[in-house]
Length: 107
Image 1 (cartoon, rainbow, N blue to C red):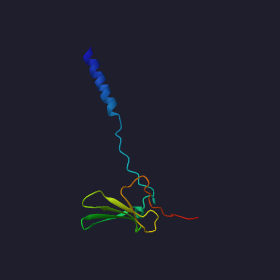
Image 2 (image 1 turned 30 degrees about the horizontal axis):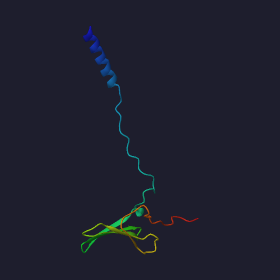
Image 3 (image 1 turned 90 degrees about the vertical axis):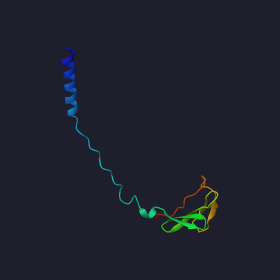
Image 4 (image 1 turned 135 degrees about the vertical axis):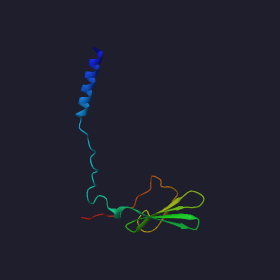
């Protein structure tokens, strides 16, 4: 009696499993046009100056930060905080680090 009940439940389970539709993954959604502007991505120039590694960070050609890594010691940063071209030395990017800001549009 147990064997026919077991076979019957097994067949019903297989039949129920066979009716499940196969799901296909959805394609990736592209970002809206104009959201990803490659001109707003920072351009990083890395060069070796003597024994130091110098990394220059620019947005739309405007230099806003330089990271200098000496051959010995910790790296330090030269940051243009006001956008006037005067670089100020920072030993780390502490919480008071200000990202350069530009006017996007005026009314």
